[in-house]
Image (tube, rainbow, N blue to C red; front, side):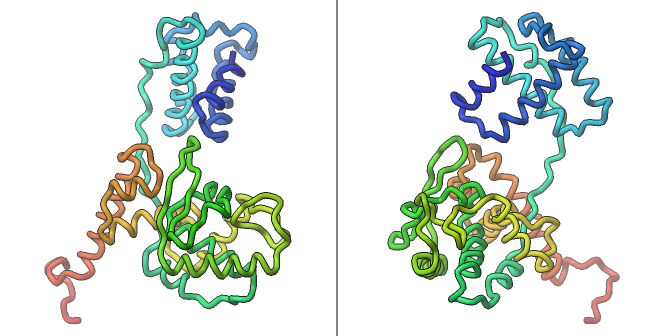
Length: 303
């Protein structure tokens, strides 16, 4: 039953491999708990909301974080929804479970002046790896794409004449992202070096290694991490932080929320809205630094 559910969410709902493996772990753990380690005794149609609450209570007692418990409840809800669609269950016992409240952490981002400083660094325009690594940073920051989208970018989908590229996002949704002159010139330089110095790639990926093979996730992470290390006050230095920086800087510089949602490929505007909290925090910080009346009375105004 579990395997057919996993096939269903992977193939029919198009959920990411990350979500599928998390749900598999969560549901295996629940089945183990419910059957005392004898999964063959599991009868999903007999499960009650009370049975599920017992498990959730045991997770809380074991010290699971609210965010983890929330995901596990969502796994149960998805599983029982599947039981209703395919196996004649008449109700979803997980629907009544309270989702654990989580404090949404604000996205970590690199400050605009820090990004500008990094992108002003000199690099060797004749060195394929240096040019490619600079392009990775510039592209992530200029387009807000995810590392997985950058990794899957095809050469044919990067159009410098039109100044736009096509990415394949979550749930296999395509979107077009426009880009400007600076990125266009960097792409042209990279392509020139790639065509001169790298063996033709087996597939038609845009980004490749010196050997002509495609990039892998860890390589992209290392490029970003090594470039930003010691150059930013951001708590993390990852490709996703550059995506956050793109969204934050777009909003800080006057882009509207709907446009940023489209560029990021968010399904829901609520996901994009988290960046307005960041931009407000930045706004408040700048106000306190810049406005003559923002300082507390009695402070040192002699300077």
